[in-house]
Image (cartoon, rainbow, N blue to C red; front, side, top):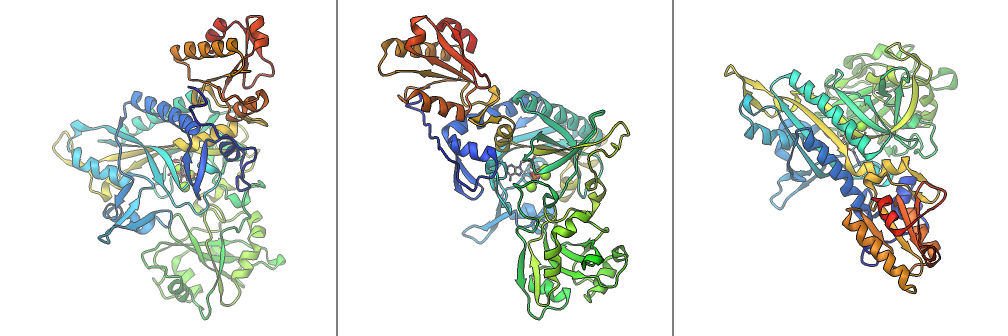
Length: 567
Ligand code: ATP
Ligand code: MG
Ligand code: MG
Ligand code: MG
């Protein structure tokens, strides 16, 4: 590859909205360009790295026995209605209508489509197990797209779905995927950790996330150096002592609700349909500081909005409100008017009460309420309260040592779905005895585009990116000094280039005629692992200089040795 025919477009400064180093460097190195919030064009250099990640993932998935398919980005609403997620997925699901007013979504994930395919194609136990995967563009209307491709709205995911005749067989494939993911991230060259993850409504131990360890990660990982215990702490971002994070109440909006006195009226005002699940949460307060316990009702499954916060004055123990009836009675709402209310107990660590004080007090004013509260950001779910209170030094649950806490970027997630989707979509097979049974399912995701950001978070310095060789856009760059002026330089550079290409090395020859300083700075920013400098001064002694991106000094080699050194 010759740089003059390729496309290199570097920037001195990153746009000011790029908060984390990977986002800044991806923009400066010309790997991506923003088209809209959370939506990017992959420029030629970035696309080369993206394709390399993709290929590693594809090779390892094929090796593990999964078969590749390509499902559509656009999916009919009917499938989502069948699974029940049309009502429950919330605003992250991008919905639209075609010219015939039929509802569609742009797929954030593909359980419905793949289960629909499986129920048509897989009829007998003889066709099981099967694992279908794809590498495909997803869309999630993230409330706060940020960190470049790490939390995009449009992004590239590898998603796989396996179908089984028994739970035992699902567990076997789940372990196979656990090993496969470990191989993938090891091969890419990332420092990662597999951690037990929350399985939400399904429960059990059937879910693991793979996290790239990095300070800028959005998740907290508790792990024990003396054992293999590791778990996602699911700490609310609001609680994290990290300046790059938004303020605890970012995204909350105060809405004017004149005349609304009861929860039922408020639900009506905010157009919260009865089909919505409503969760209630108690924020524990400190009476002495003037902050009483506060009950909040939150709607939806995942993308939740606070609809009401109210002081529970005179209530000594907020846990007294541990039932839907008690909550509804306290707020004067008619039974059933809020839809199902799920409520477990007190929620928030004491630290967050202070963080939310304004919010809580503000929402208690007459005729004002807040919307946009987000579980996971402003609060965490009651069910994980115990884990959330973990701090470094606490004993590990396996009793083998003390916990440490670090931050991680979720790059992969494997999940035993069991029969959740197969039941909803009636995905059955006939077993050996001629009986119909519902299939067991697993699903397995990798954030292909997110990996690029995560790799840069782990591998960079003041001059730019330092790619792991496995996913570098080019493995080596030839930098000729005086390409236009010196015949010897030109000939040697071209010969090196041709020999490296013949040896299968991804090499680029910088024939743009840039001055050495600017040329070197570009390739350091782009993060090419190896640089070969060809200049008249070296050639007089019969040598060229090779310098690794992490090395302080160059080493001299004859041009022939340089080829061997680079291959
Ligand atoms: P997160 O917790 O970061 O929102 P998630 O748990 O919602 O991720 P999954 O549904 O588990 O994501 O999707 C599988 C993988 O897709 C994730 O492990 C992650 O690597 C990637 N991913 C999810 N959301 C995004 C996004 N907005 N941008 C880029 N990659 C993403
Ligand atoms: Mg998400
Ligand atoms: Mg997650
Ligand atoms: Mg996940």
